[in-house]
Image 1 (cartoon, helix red, strand yellow):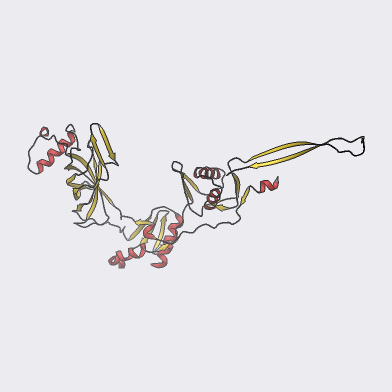
Image 2 (spheres, rainbow, N blue to C red):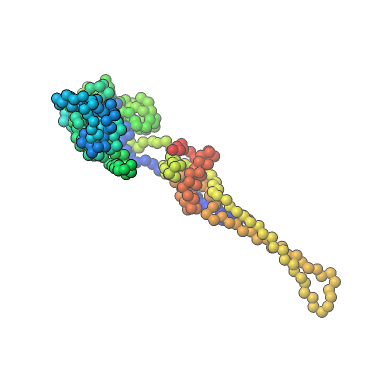
Length: 369
């Protein structure tokens, strides 16, 4: 019996070492405080639609059309605008941290009314405002829509979402913007993912390459960097040197599980303590076969001779693709690889990982999406 059970165990004796991250530039780990994008928005009108625009009962569209025509000298009333070749839209864009007059950027256009499609439309001149309600750019141009919709006799054919589109390089900057990244006499580097170990490594890396006592840790998410007066004239050169400093960031062990798609993503170095995994049912059947042994006599009668009952025991173990796996101090990568060899499907792997976490053997945060 021991031999049979021993045959069910897959032993992995090699202990994997955690995978170390490669050196990463600081510019890929965070940003300087004050260096950020600026959202812009606007309210405009798309014209040139082939009868797929807003319906005449949409009062917002009628008012927008009257205002647009009024700016070009056409004095019309709301009742005189009954076309479905126009639609009122919301226009959004993202202004770079540093932008000059004349720079161009893409804009996204989405329908606000009951338009069926924006295919073939052209965005009329629209001001793009910032959070301070000041205009920073002007958008205009033909739309690129990655879809369509056609209607005929109450039949409809639609692909993707034709009520949203993009005007490539459709906005032009009219007000220059320059990010203020100097915080008094220092620069503040903000980490994308706060971590005390990574922050200390960033400070040590800057001090090693720029100069001693140049940087110090302010917290898990920020590093203070001294910007002396002598370097103010070459501030951007100093920033370039800092953001190209390379360190080896630390990371929190995580296992991301998406049960809807059956996806498991984990770092190769996520550790698992010694654990035994039994996946599925292992069936053991015991069969008793009784046979009678009748003695054969030669030369007459033999008193005391009796028949012998012989019992044969047969043990059959049926496991199919199921088995028991023992993993001594290994990683998630080894566990998943072992389960794959046993032909366990993805959802079975997810169930095993959740069970290992519940048992306290998986040393990582499990994120279920």
